[in-house]
Length: 115
Image (cartoon, rainbow, N blue to C red):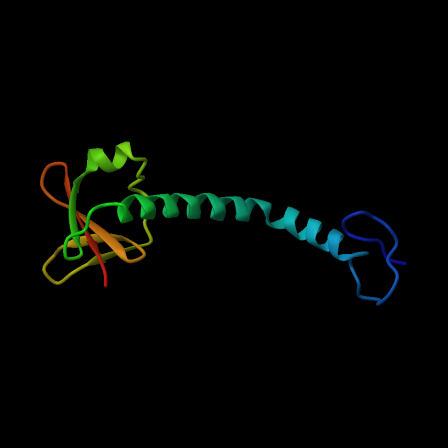
């Protein structure tokens, strides 16, 4: 007889069964994926927060201007973004999904929203 990988109880049923019930299967798999899940959860939370901060800006014709200091004071973390793009004119934008920003002179940033 086999024993459950999670609780150690005897398993009844199919010969290839590894868990005694769904609760044990879920608990076992959650333990196995905890580290990866925490990393993904924390990263996604930071991306979500950055996106919410940018989306609260006042956009005129899909553009807005702000300062690095203002975004930082709102909790924006510049190292978290979803993709990076360099355009033919040499402009480099960092994007959070459909909202992008590029650094201008001094402390200024241009924020754009894709339509």
